[in-house]
Length: 223
Image (cartoon, rainbow, N blue to C red):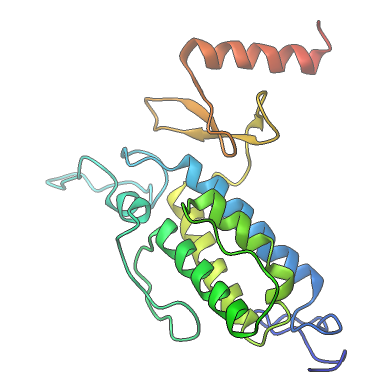
């Protein structure tokens, strides 16, 4: 094992690694944060055109536009874009979110088994929420492995993709009234709604107006 003077190996970080680890604690927490936000961003995605992506002005003329966002469809399809996980990953196409999370869970799980480390297997019925939650629980162990920087690279790239696809919805709009989660915008310019990234509850139309009035009353101190 390395000593306490070893530099953090994540993305040219100037800090020293924690004793017994290959990363510093801020970089470990950043990996956990990426996993939380990957789950949150995924909850905001919609294939309807009009939100996120390049979003720039289109030239007038004979341009055509598909009826749905193909990049979001590819990202939400677990079968799409099989790519290598780890140091040999050179794929820059749109990644499947669930497929990538599944492969990362499989990679970490195989290393836990290989090193005979005490652990629980990833959830059998894997979802983005369950997979990212499982990975968060093993970030501390992963930072003690020499490949921690490769895991950080994969998480950073998936996080950046989701941030782009979600139209850079970097902050939730409000806390969810039904659980401890946060409400994120969903839909396009013509369909306004919010959805909780944890319990999945959605609010639109009159329900969204009522929710807005509740928050307004809380802010003004009204009963």
